[in-house]
Length: 180
Ligand code: GDP
Ligand code: MG
Image 1 (cartoon, rainbow, N blue to C red):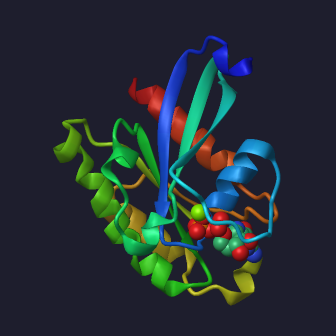
Image 2: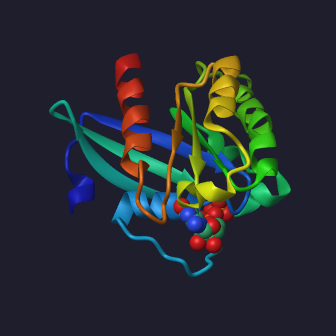
C-alpha cells in the first residue's frame, strides 16, 4: 500500500485550538480534498497521513486531530508526545477562540519539559475565511500575536471553500525539513 512506501521524512503534526473552530474539517480537507458539513465529533485521538513531494523529497505528514477533548482543555499527554510541530487554529467569527490562542501556545511550550524535546515550531491559522463578513479579529491583530509568541506564520483558511489548506501543512513541513 502507499502507506508502506519509503519516505525521506515523517512528521507528526498536532492540531489544537478550541472546539468548533474547524480542525476536523481542515484535516479532512487536507487528507481527502472533501468538506463534510455533517456535524461530526472526533471519536478517540485520530490521525491522518498524506504524502507530499517537497523539492523532490517524499514527506509523510501525519496530522493528529483531537478527540474533542479540547472542550475540557484536558488533552491527553500522549497526544503531544513526539510531535514535531504544532498547528493552532481559531475561528475568525468567534473572538473567544482567538483569546484562547495563548493558552494553546502555552501547552505547546510546556512540551519540551514534559518530554525533553527541543521546542517545536508553532503555526497559527484562522479558519472560516469564507465568513469574513462576520470577522471579529483583524488579520493584523493575529500577526501581532504571532510575532509576540514567535510563531512561524499566520494563515487564513477555509475548509469549506478549500482555501489555503495545503499551504498550512506545506509551510510547516518545509520548516521542519529546514530544521532537520
Ligand atoms: P473542531 O471541533 O475544531 O474539530 O471543528 P469541526 O471541524 O467539527 O467544525 C465545526 C463546525 O464548523 C462544523 O459545523 C463545520 O461544518 C464548520 N466549519 C468548519 N470549517 C469551516 C469553514 O471553513 N467555513 C465554515 N463556514 N464553516 C466551517
Ligand atoms: Mg474535531
